[in-house]
Image (cartoon, rainbow, N blue to C red; front, side, top):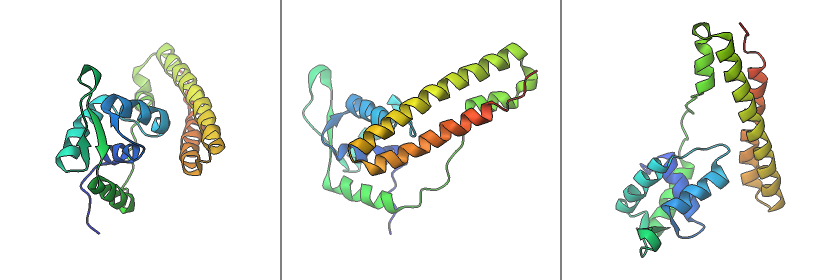
Length: 171
C-alpha cells in the first residue's frame, strides 16, 4: 500500500475534519478537547499543516469568516489519505519527558529544586488523571468506545508517572 506522506499531526487534523468544516482555531480547540489527554499539537503545527494539506488537495478552503478566519473542510482525496494513513505502521513512539530529564540531572540540583519539581509534577499528573478519567466516563456515556479506550492510555500514563514520582530520590 502506498504511503500517504502525511505525519500524525496532519492525519489528526484530517480525522477531526471528518466532523465538518473548521478554522485553524476551531481545530486547535477540538484537538485539545478530544485528543489533548494523549496527543498534543501546537498552534504552529496546526497552521503549518493546513496549507500543506491544502496543497496536497486533502483539504479545501472555505470562504473567510470574521477576522479573516479561514475555514477548512476535508476533500474526498483527504478522506482516502486518512484511511490509508490509518493502515500504515505507526512507527515507534518518541519518549520525551522533561521531568525525567531534569531528574536525570538531579545531582546538579538542590534538594529544594528537586522537591519543587516533584511536587509540581505530582500536582500536574493528579489533575490530568482526574481530567482523563472524567473524559473517558463522558466518552463511554456518549457511546464513543474508541475514544474511551484511547483515554485509558492517558489514565495509565498518569498513574505510571505518579508511581514513578514516588521513587525520585530525595537529597
